[in-house]
Length: 168
Image: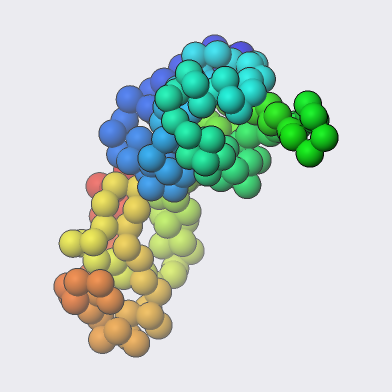
């Protein structure tokens, strides 16, 4: 594995807010699965072995791996052991994982900044927003809601790049 990818992933996983985003997006067991594949790069492992190593059920593992697969981060193949009995083998593409984490954290912030710079009028809820996850409304949505957050009824405020930087 490329040392830069490993370093980037380690730095990202040291950030509490990024770990929180991963768990919110992928599931409770995502961090242990990801850490396993970082510690064993280029590994293809059977579902049963990975469940045993991580001490999680097959259902819990499949939930995580299928979400990763949907994002083109994990891949699998299956081997038929007995008629109608398959063993699944999983692998994670750490380059894709790093890119996905970036896109869903820092990339979201950059997208919002670009929208503001292009002249789009955006509003946000200060109470419901958190790092990498700004509760965002278009001008039209804000008008429809009478400039009140649909979740907490806090007053929506205009969003500027200076404010966005605080959520980075």
